[in-house]
Length: 148
Image (cartoon, rainbow, N blue to C red; front, side):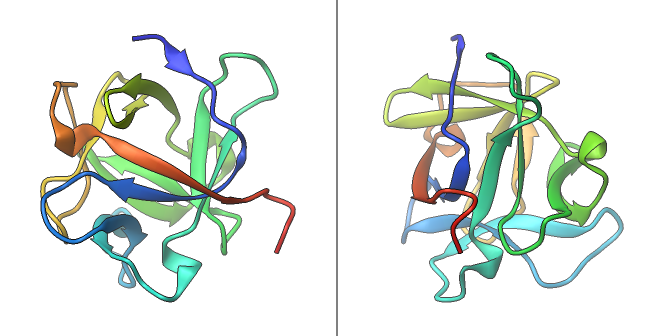
């Protein structure tokens, strides 16, 4: 499927997995590559669950970077086919495109791998895209980037 444009802004990213509603969440404790990124139930504190999605450059079709809304430099990075959040220069941030699928979007890395949530609490991995609901996400627009 061709990539679709996403409005730059602050989002909550909902996982489509069995069980209670889950959001993409930065964990509190860092390991080798940064803080693991998991799916977790909705947390009243948005600092670990609100993400800025913005294009790498202001050109049509440019890939997107995803970073924590509360921390300008804390962006998604990929190591060992898993997602982490870490303070990295923008050029080192993972880049993604979005594809429309039944019920949501598929989030694809620059290597063509799809984000996948196995179950609530599991670290988000990247895998060859398949038509599975664990690779489907909903982007909930919260507010524009320049609003607090």
